[in-house]
Length: 365
Image 1 (cartoon, rainbow, N blue to C red):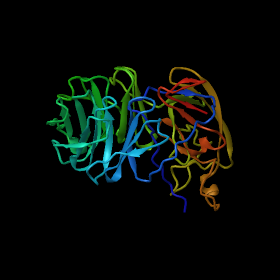
Image 2: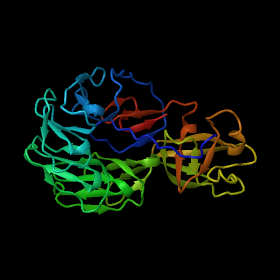
Image 3: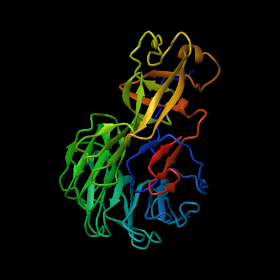
């Protein structure tokens, strides 16, 4: 039976920090793919330049590449616990953190990893190397740990509220942000000694936060949510770009994990909702041809996208499990889900990588 559910979208970040994104309505040839030699669950990756990087995951696995990710070698770490984050201050000094508050430190590029005494036994989900001596980590139950002596000691700077903290980023040794449960984003200007809450207007789980400057940043979370700020987090706005549909502009995003297109209709006679139990989906009497205009977050480029909405109940009586014409009622935003990807190539331009379209980060199709 076809499930009436919106799946978790994929928020991809392959470098230690990301630039704010514009939408580019053009296509480019795909790049080469890296064939991994491993099949562990991998949770984090960090590069200090275009070629030198590390990845970590289950069973205490740390991998290292010197050629931009085309080849990877294991770097032994003395644990079988999951490692959820890796961060390097330079090509030699870095940390990995993970389950049970584990922290491991290297000063030789990962050839050897030394266990450090943590300030917690709770899970550490993320970490940020601020310098060769300073680092900060965050995790479950509001846990925050900080070191200023290369990890010889870790100070407990736990946030007073019980929240899960997943994302962390700093623009220098003092100013940074943490993202986590209930749409929470915290901001500090004193290396985490004190934190202020920044209003996001959402309650979604946030898994990542990244700043390219003290003012420009992104946060990503469940249901394909992307938040963007251009004022250091004083205000956060939804969406990667703007979609204008039926004369109304919406914050919008591309969503690899949603199985339909979701948008407000404002015309119940044109887009009637299906009867129970599929109330979230549209059931027009016949398939409708539509179009919308997408505009990059900077105001350009612009492009028109054509799409179709059919009767969900009728379509899902077929033996097929994937449909190009299904859509549902969105809550004040435009979610370009799986049908958007049919018949077009969609690419992501990575930060710092140049192409004929310019430097990333951007979407291209």
